[in-house]
Length: 150
Image (tube, rainbow, N blue to C red; front, side, top):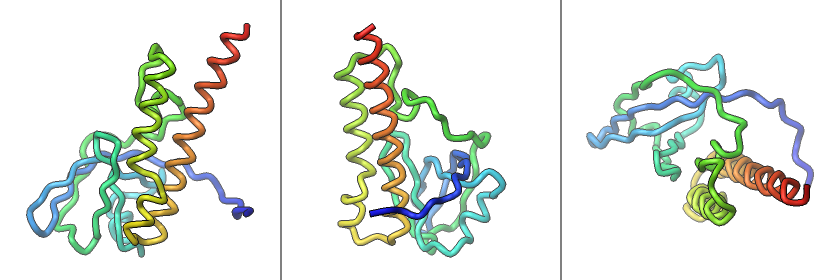
């Protein structure tokens, strides 16, 4: 019921190109702590690496299948802007925002990932993503309701 209080660490979004041992390429974003390097992420004790693809879905890559990985571009801190989190324009109507929220939530829902029998760490990360998406949607809707009431 009650979760442990955790120290909130700012994460950095890093766009990466991962080449798997099969020759397949995976491009997307990974999230690392501010003072961490990509090599630190690849060599930590987790067996899998969640990669957020450009469509918002998450591909889980087994670290044992990674042949090489390269960071592309600059590292960017995660945004606190709810519109950026949901990847919608602030001028979007409520229906478009709800659709974007539902689409992003479906791709990273922890129950969906748990049903794939993935590591608990990945399911935990999916819970955090879902919480972030829900909080962004709630913040936008609350602000819009107060604007209409004013």
